[in-house]
Length: 508
Image (cartoon, rainbow, N blue to C red; front, side, top):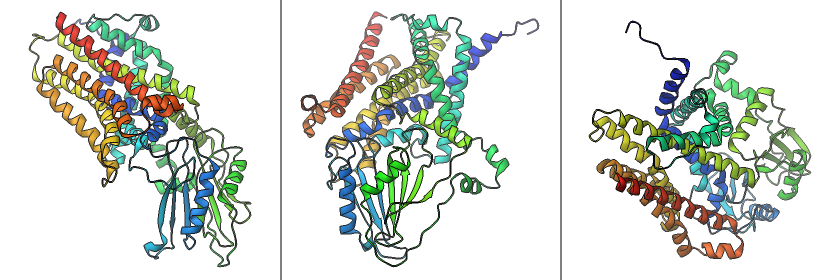
């Protein structure tokens, strides 16, 4: 219109903030929700493998792996031992014959990391599935999944920066939280959770982009290398090969070789090792460092398995690669001690709540602007119900994932995949339910169902294992006790939200 006043800079930023947060909002909620659980993925994995003993990795496990491999895999071409970063993952041992040999020279075993005993643990993906879902999604081609996640992260970065510009009193808003005020309450909650961990939100979004940005912006690589394979050859060079000599000779124990690798890394922890040509005078031990600290000069080492001297040390990383490694470690938080991981977790919960309240706020504001708020059009009703399914649905699914771990038969084929199926079946069932119910009732019922599922997790755990909450508290086992207490706290939070909404509906 002629003479119409154009929106100012702050109003433009507000519109940008709304739309870049809304369009990928459901995906951002999933990224934050599943990514937040990943800060305790090792503890989750430990809870989902109750057959294992408590305790961190010990040299007993390496000694037991050494004995097992000598007994069962003396004629193998290579031995591989995968070591856990923290308690929760098992020690995986495998061996394989030379190319063309039959399956008689192949095998694998699972060892308890604390005791080294050969254990049969239930098939589960544990916390690793929750971690990988937040950037690889599920049943989506990897390139597509990571591209979608990267685009969502870019939108998140824009939403954070535009949100800071939009709010004049952003820090004052943190101390303003009014309950029972409808749209005002949702806005207060969104502002408070956004400001509570604003530096964390910026850091976690930017570092996530640093890890995945080449997925959708590969031009720096394309400008300097003819193919992606050529880039990988330079950034991740192949180590030299050491062929077998055909002369037998005893090797050093695996535990001693691991100690020498850690000494070469100035205390860095071993993440895995491969023995090539075991028992040969040219046997080598390739070691890979865990990504749990900064400044490891050579993340890969090859030692002589006979006398332990260094045969190969990976070249020092360039500045760009080292900077990216720092970004990835900051994002994963694997370097953090328990207190700092709790800070990561609480900040992640704040980010999840920030995205969730923003999605709800959009529907609350739009309903007030409808010609007849009591009879919204189909598109609005659909978005409103999808909000419920995409916010509460995955939370209910995670509770079902934990329950399936305890209730599915231990000898069930593809048991780990069935646990994941239970997550998505619960999520899908809740989606169908919300589509059939009035929105106000659907919110209350979905939250109440999720609260019930989380409350059942400690109960079912106590009935199916010897690691119930009372027993764990008496034994001082804080992995199991902490997990059950967190389930009860989540249940109480969801029940409180359902009760508040029910009381508000009665008043209305």
